[in-house]
Length: 79
Image 1 (cartoon, one colour):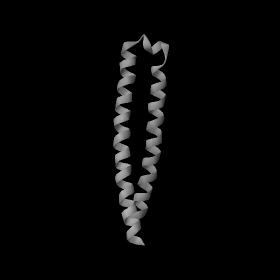
Image 2 (tube, helix red, strand yellow):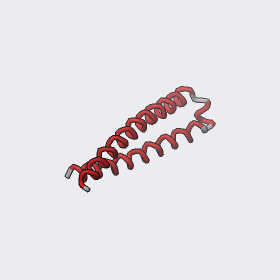
Image 3 (cartoon, helix red, strand yellow):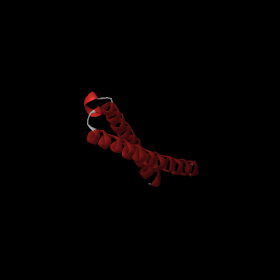
């Protein structure tokens, strides 16, 4: 049961990581927009969003790593 729960969490975290990476990529593309270069407020907003997303990505990846390690430990115990 714990194995199934952890496996499900790992898959959800992997999906979340992909979504966050896509959001970061989208925001980075916005930074190259000439319109954004002349709008300091919007530029600051996008930059702050990227920083927030990058921190969320690090936190999510850390949780993924910890959950994966727990899952591997439980899998070995089942053998």
